[in-house]
Image 1: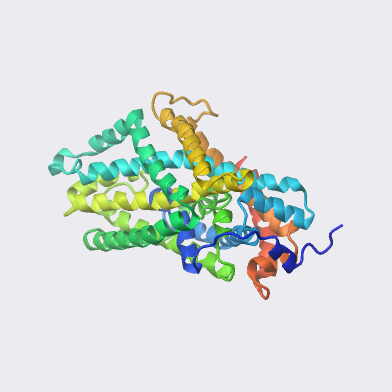
Image 2: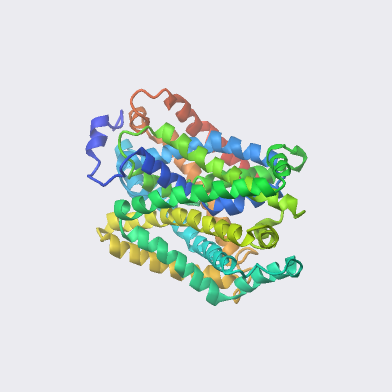
Length: 462
Ligand code: TRP
């Protein structure tokens, strides 16, 4: 019978030597690179648009503060205290606390989730690459009145209808992700992140400046920050919660795996706040880059997934330097997707490496190849195989729903229960540092707040 769990020393001894990143800043950049992605730039603006703007933003912020940040701390801590991939991390912690060994399946599910998300993420990231290409080469640069919504709409439909373009663009994206991941945690990921994140931030800042100068900035601010509670439905709350998990890359092994590369001394709570802060800031500023132009042109803010690919090109055609602005915009989306793609590939690669003792090259190659095969399902479900074979959804929508709404919710719930009920206080200390005052609050959040809220939402949605 284990009574007290482990001693701090015991758990420290459990850490095999492993490369960690240079410092806290690299970790913050890598983790916010994971967090900031298509979720922030593509999904958040249109979801906020569809769900009434400001009121949705408030609920979303509450979800980030009460559920997102605590879970983010938990996942980083689980990774760092074991220095293992998600499956290995849950195995070790379960063994050390005397909990059932089947807790490791939570880690396994998380790895599957990241793999499946990446299998369709590369397709959407491929759209960004394609749009970057056509915007930069002047495709949308036509005499003003000949570009209308039918035309941009048709361009998007033609893209989705063409397996060849979809396959080429997703392979291009997957290839870059693979090239970075296969070069290693320090030589590949750290090095790439150190370039990619600052570039993305610079482009975003330039875009906001430009959009504020020529667009209807006041209307955008009012839309994003003035809550209209009449538009807020129960469904919006579920969407806000799911999106807060998705945007922080939770419940899908990314943060556990990155946590396992985090330097030992940095403070986890502070780091988690920084990452969530950057992520939220980017989501809101992305809105501030896009909506001024949308309102200026009298377009619909709630235009759905097509907002980015159908409505925006109309604007790019109409504004001064639109070709430059438009291509910078899609290039920024591509960088954001790349830093997230890396974090979605790493969990599987780390697991293969550690579980089967394979080299990184072999693990990365196998992961990339299987991702490509699975991504074909998404590609074809947009055209030649667009059938509602999965509970009335095509494969793409079904995968999106299954991962973002089912797997991630289950994973978050299980992680919270594990931290709340299985981990002993001295293990939590290891996560947060010896004297952290936050431990009682953290435990209460994991024990009651997160599970109750998720269960309530799940029950009502059924
Ligand atoms: N957070 C990223 C986004 O907002 C996507 C992402 C990266 C992700 N890693 C993840 C989503 C892990 C879920 C799980 O686009």
